[in-house]
Length: 265
Image (spheres, rainbow, N blue to C red):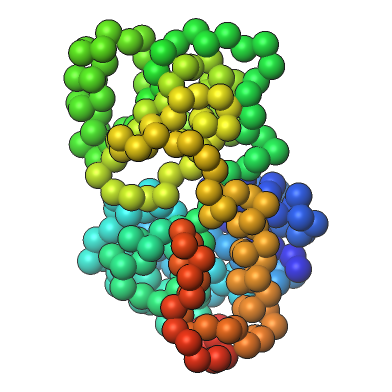
């Protein structure tokens, strides 16, 4: 299986390579339309008609990856774009059940897991700051930034606020410098950062809930084989033993009949 990953999927590509999958990112390919790929996974393909039109030129079967943070940008225009993409033969791969429910179009739910090889406490790193917080610029209300600031005023703890992109390979050191990680948002977008922080030795909190373990659906060792099963089913058109999709958190299967997965390509 050879995969082309377009957009924000560098970490996914690395995890797939751990499992022997030949996956490359668009930045490393001169002309992806002229190379042979079994599957193309595109991030943000719904963002413009131009990007949607380029789907037709992509090699292999097409998957549009909808990230957890996309839940904050859903509009009627987004839904129309995704309907067009499905008509063009794309499969939608959701990062959360909430996101799938909001969009209302068929597609499997697969939560991007944490890279357990990368995220671990950085050696000889002192806890220099009490709290680490992250938000996306322009989405201060979504990330409840004022609520966090008020909390810090009350507790008097020292803190760092990240509001930009940090190379993923540097994040273990960032987490390891902080005693605690706190996250507030208005949506359940299955974030990775609370679990990354937990694995790096932080006391980690997600919307008031303390993270005390890494669940299976966030563990690369369980989640990547699940993704490979989804990809194999698209390539081989083999029967899937469910009419719906496996729930990412509980592992339960919706539907009871044995049915061939509908082919969208």
